[in-house]
Length: 422
Image (tube, rainbow, N blue to C red; front, side):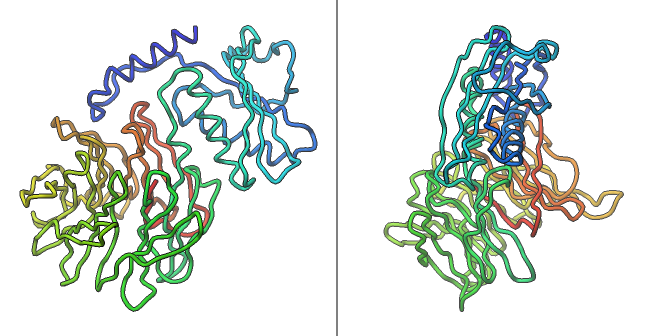
């Protein structure tokens, strides 16, 4: 039965993966139903156990590859005959975990069990050195369980998120977190620190702009040793908006003569090259087409819109023909997701919605409907988009699962999100 479900799942994804801007027509009616059992010893803190259960359940829901049983269930790790309760609920799979409270590490033993036969198909021991990072342990387990049923990868859940948040006027902090914001560690404080950007695929360092010195300065913070070094300074605006795949080149937005343009900065030689040359505003450059081209935001039409340009020439191509205020964008292969300002709603205030386009078709797909939806970022696959949502004085991190046509929000408890990267 599970194999049949996975075949249906894969066929559905393949059926429209050729153009993710097209709305889903086929729906998956039958996904494997999974129940999660806490088999931790009684001496393990109950709030810790329940928090871990909620993370696992949330991950599996966000994956969009499971139907998740809501009830928090207890069991022994060895287990016994499958409970009638699970049979009545028509559960297909059981994810059973046992947490260890007796160390500074976060430790979990996990089993995946066929609920119909009681046969264990997967078992593994997990640990993470810093117990405070236990949300990442839950994400790793969820990624492995998802892989066990043969569903498309959700390894993006293991990525760290780096974001800047305003704490008060002219003050902001830079924080590293998991995608649910359950784990957060403040890395930079003091003054105005904004626009963090991961420096490499390993997420071992990040760039950010500080406005705390004489001139705005881009710094690189190394997470391995905690060291910080200045990369480049300049008057006016200076931001690292993207990093090349090999980590050796940066796209910078700079305004040395009051007008912002996109620059290419070589990390090894410290050489800087001006890419765009326009008397107005060019900002937010992103690499596309294997780092040979860039997409960026410009007011060349009299309003902000999305354009593309080869790095080695000045020919500029308009990419978006919808909206009159398209102010942030992200690219993955031939897909571009961007934020567009709509007309003021009947409830007052402005709405910024996200749209997805393909450079190979004329299709346009609206992804959001309410609030201010800003700074979209693709994950390392084209199926998942992260963004900032501001709605009713609440700042949240949003996750869009394109294949499933679902959106999830994770609220920031204090402060206001300024920018994100993952």
